Image: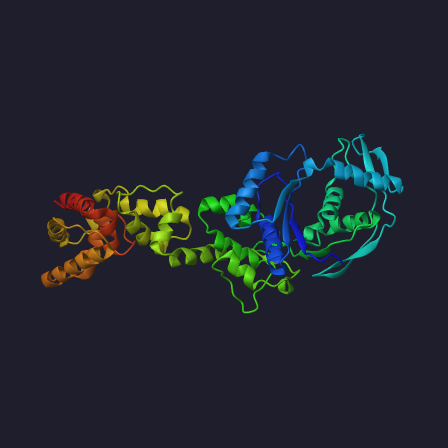
Length: 428
C-alpha cells in the first residue's frame, strides 16, 4: 500500500469547465488538503480533433478563479506518448493486446480482457460488479491512446491512490479495473459521486442553469458562493452549515466520510440567493473593488456611494450597471407629471433652493439633508409621501428604489437640482 495520498483532476480541453467538472476538481482538492496529500493536474488532450489550447487556458483560468491550486502539473497526455507505447508493449507480450480493424476500417490496437466480468470496490457504493466486457481499443489508428488506457497508464505512473469523480464514469471504471490488473498495477481507491440533477429531478442541462464556470464568473457570482454551493452537491456538513468564508475554511471542515452517492439537486435560485447574501455582507469598499470589471457610468468621486446605494438590491455583480442606470439614467418628467400631487411644485421649489451650496459628500450628509426636508414638509402640512414620492420621480423617474438620501448622495447636489428643476418646469 502506498503511503502518500495522491489524487488527480483530469479535465479534457474540448469545451468549457461545467459544474460537474468543477465539483470534481473541488472534491479532489478538498480530499488532498484533508489527507495532507498531493493534487495532480493532468490534461487529457488525446482527442486531437476536439482539444484546443484555448479551452485549456479557459479551464485553468476558471480553476484559478475558484481558488483551486495544484501541487503538480499540468501534465499533458499529448506529451506522454512513450509511456503509453511501453504499456501497450507489455500487453502485447502477454497476449492481451492485438491489432485489428476498428469500425471505420482503420487499424487499431485492442485489449483482450483475460476476464469478462468481475468487481471493483467503491468507497461510496461498496462492491460494484460488472460483466460482459468486450474487447476495446487502447491505441487508436493514429497511435494516440484511448481514454481508459491513457488514464490507467497515467494513474499508475503518477502513483495516484484515490480517484474521485462522477458516477457517469462507472462503466469506464470496469474497463480500467481490468487494465490495472492486466498491467500488474495497484488500483486506486474509487469514489463515484452521485449525478447532479436539475430542480425537476432530471439530468442537469442548460435550461436548469447549467452554464460553464466562466458564465458564472462573467455574470458576477462570487467564487466563494459557487464553491460553497458546489461543496454541498454530494457532501454535507455535520452541523448543516451551508456557507464558508473561504475555500481554506471549507477545507478545514471537510470530511470525505460525509460524501454520498445519492444524486444532488442543483437549484440555480438557491445559488443566486446565497450569492446575494454575500453581496449584501461585503464592506462597500470591497464591493467596489469587485465591481471593477463591470463598467458603470457614474460621477467621478461618487463610486463608493453608488456601490453602497445599490448593494441591497444587487444579487450578482453584473446587476450593478442596470441598478445604477435606474438611478443615474435619463428622466423624462412628461411621463409622470400628470400624477404629481398639487404640493409638488412647492416641494420642488423648496428643494432646489435648499440644494444651493450643499456638498452632500457622503450618505450621512445626505440623510441629514433629507431629515431637514421632512421637518420642513411637516411644518408646511405636507405629508411625507407627498414629499418623497415626487422627489423620487423627479430624480429617477421610478416609483421605487433605494433610500432617498442615497439618491441625493449618488447624483450629487448639482445633478439632483437639475433634475428637480426639469420636473418643476414640466409642472409649470
